[in-house]
Length: 236
Image (cartoon, rainbow, N blue to C red; front, side):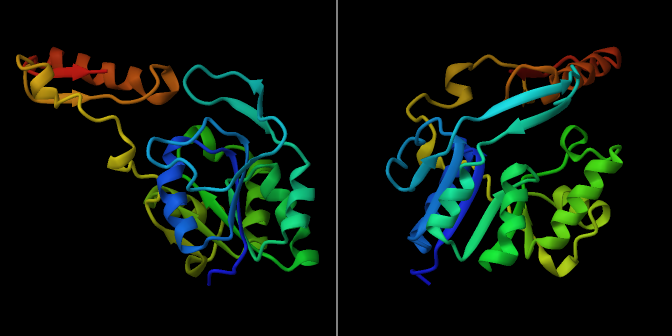
């Protein structure tokens, strides 16, 4: 298996991808990650992946929506075609339903490689369930692909029920999981840093922007207060 050439196509190789990909590359050494944006290696994973940045990653906003990701188009360089033709991978794992996935599927009959679509999860802002055109294109892509992997049960449901993927070609595996070795250490626990906090403690981790759900969390806190529940702490 060590001689199997594998390409991962990721618009952005964020830190949360890297622990799983590093372990994947250990099992399959001939793995190359192609990305439009690379923020650098996560702590402790330096040099464990072969990463090549292709062109420039850009998000082109079409319709703005304050409550979600809105309607946008992610530009990725077509130079990926030359890289794939040069590498001639046996298997391509491509993130979501972007232009790189489309190009990999279009070249599939010519190059005879296998294509696996990786769909991170499911949410109203990225599923486009109200767009007949996007659903049609995605269903066609799923039909052309050899398999799909997803990070959650919600993603599995979306792929099977909405995109009509075959159940035996959809695999659920939580692969975007924080690795303890890559997280900052030595800062102590919450109890040590904030010994007087009222419990229970609710922790919000993410960008403080509407589409990450913070307003919904604040609404939930308002409901708790209206019902007389105030003995808790919200950490953001």
